[in-house]
Image 1 (tube, rainbow, N blue to C red):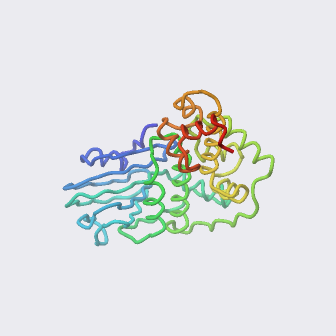
Image 2 (tube, rainbow, N blue to C red):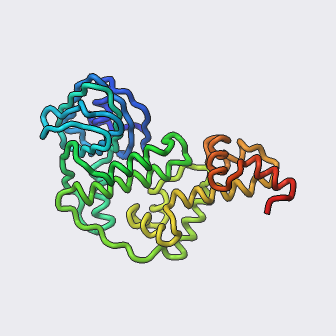
Image 3 (cartoon, rainbow, N blue to C red):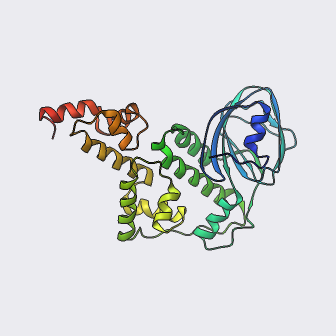
Amino acid sequence: MQPIREAGVFDALVSTGARLEDSCWLEPGLGLASWCNRYDQTRYHKPGHHTISVYLQGGEQTERLDGPGGHGGAGKVCIMPDHHRSEWLVREEFRFFHLYFSPSHLGRIAEEACDKEGRHLVLEDKTFIEDPVAAALVQRQLMGLNWQQDEDRMALSHGAWMLMLHAYRHHTQEAPALPQIRGGLAPVTIRRVQEYLLAHLADPVTLSDLAREAGLSEYHFARMFGQSLGCPPHRYLLGLRLKRARQLLAGSEPLASIAAQCGFSSQGHLGNRFKEAFGLSPGQWRSQLSSGCHD
């Protein structure tokens, strides 16, 4: 997936020499990146997409030259809408996270969740604000995932949508209120989603894929899924993958093959997740099965 190419924030940082630590593009117009920059001056000019920036480490000596003043620092949040213009001075090394999303993504929240026109929503321009919810979502959830592992793609997708929903609710002018979600998914929808997941255990699956299968918006699907099954979609998918791995461990297939069939990027990643869930490595589980000592 290629990054946004409208003289966007991503490209501006590449051109200044900022170091890209990691990036992941979930669908057209929706991507994440983590950066490190120092001793630099950067300009953004109408990037054509929205950006949520969260400072991860340092940044106290970073300032917006054309802005309201103040300085960065770990946990500080900047909101840069599609029409944004700014100039930044970086005096020392700092690390930061970016979520890039198109105006149509913001509009979809209003249109699909609220049944309201979303084309004219205005994301507010904010610099160095305190937003503990957004900062915690990035630092504790999104940055804790491996962006290059297919097994984490669902969790990344879910986290990105939660961050956009937060921006919609708290940083968008005159946004229609999100409705309360009551009730869960219909049984036939649950079965259809479960069948889809079982058929795609080895594939990268996003929240959009499941919402489309259910015929719902991402917002409605994630909330209703949680009410029906008691956990977010990415945790449910991990449970299915581990259950399949446990079944395959009763046979003699190599662990690397089992990992691939169950959607884990490597034997090591299967081992880590399996031990977290069951307290044993896959090899130990298989040994106990073969010895007849495991229930």
